[in-house]
Length: 94
Image 1 (tube, rainbow, N blue to C red):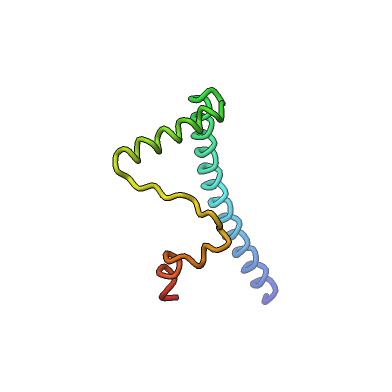
Image 2: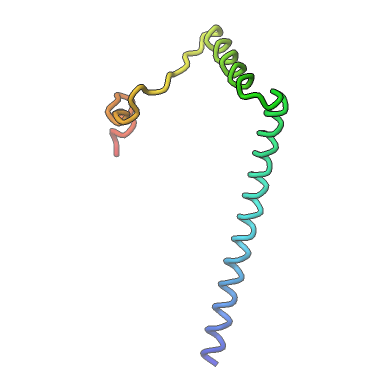
């Protein structure tokens, strides 16, 4: 009887785990599908030309700068990023 109960417990836990993995996989597949659809729509909008996509991004950045937004530039030396004032402030309470 004890072995039977252990087996039943094992099968129950396994089925719960499999079910939760299935739900996560299904949600992940939906998210991935939506991302691929967005990517495909954007690519089709620019006739699959990366130069046109890049030019559109640059045009959008120029419009934001003209509207008064301050766009940050990527760090010149990412290896020393942890030494910036922002990082020191951000992780001061760690």
